[in-house]
Length: 255
Image (tube, rainbow, N blue to C red):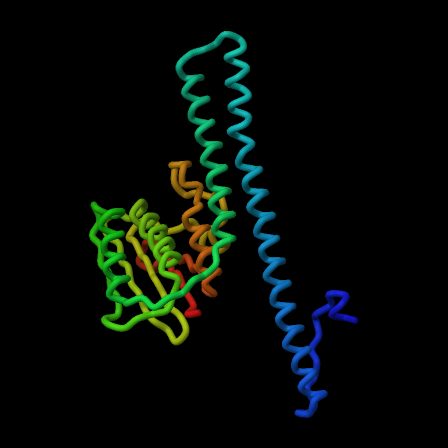
């Protein structure tokens, strides 16, 4: 009855190895899996609420500006500044919508792990850094030899986001490192810039937050990386280094 009523906050004791004990074990496994699924669905629903709230909040200013610009046009004030403002804020709303769409697509992604050589990951990280951080001094450190089982495309998306973010804020240098733990691959990207704002370190990346004056980023790179790490059973950790600079650690659990 408790399972039927979606009350899963209990456990079934397994007192014997006979048929009744095996039945209890099967019910306990089912209860545990249902509870895990319900918690995941709840987390996704809460995340969607936060995303929608951020989306609605950040649209208010562009809409207000567009309304004001339309009023000026109706009054016959058609200066170049008004036209530029209309174009700029229309583009901004378009980018918001595209960002929302991209997050929804990320949520629908399924993790598809496959064996990939570490030497391949090293080459790809070096090439990504060359393209995104051309003017910076970059070091890439990856264990030699061997393979890992991860979602290759998902890993590259996160790596591109973190390297691109580091390249924007680094003063001179970026460090990229892969380490292997017992059950996961750890990608760490560090830069020698000003570091993350305290709120970002404490609360993690949220949608439509940006530390840059370039509003086209909307802080979505770090947020989407967080989602992808969690999809891979891991997480994204943002820290400030003791000697200065930012450090982003993406953990991918082997599936």
